[in-house]
Image (cartoon, rainbow, N blue to C red; front, side, top):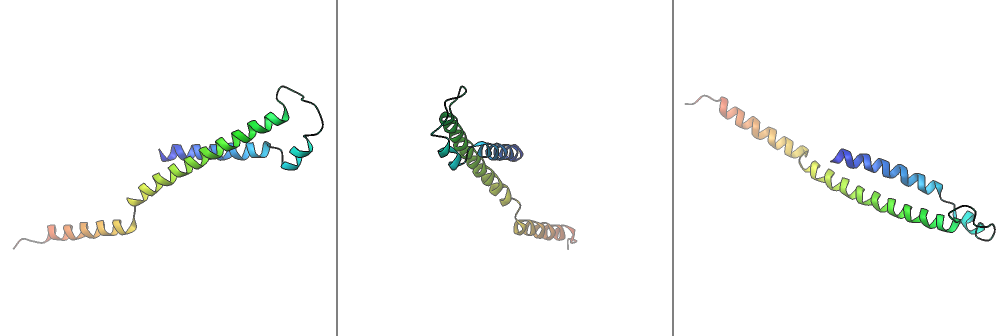
Length: 104
């Protein structure tokens, strides 16, 4: 599950960077409002709205996926604590010594 979420995280990051780079900067957007007609099927204003919505959706998905990855990692790290491992080894070593000692 963690690997799948990690792959999704990388894909979301690439798409998020791509969609941000495709957007016009604020100076381009302001200068483009006055002139030119609506060329093509989608006007520049509606295209900007679509890009903004897509950016918000991708950013929200990225954050949700990040939180899920953090939650899974936190759960897995509880089982991999160094102190827990040392305690377990100490108990096993102690139990092993008792098993080897001859009965008197």
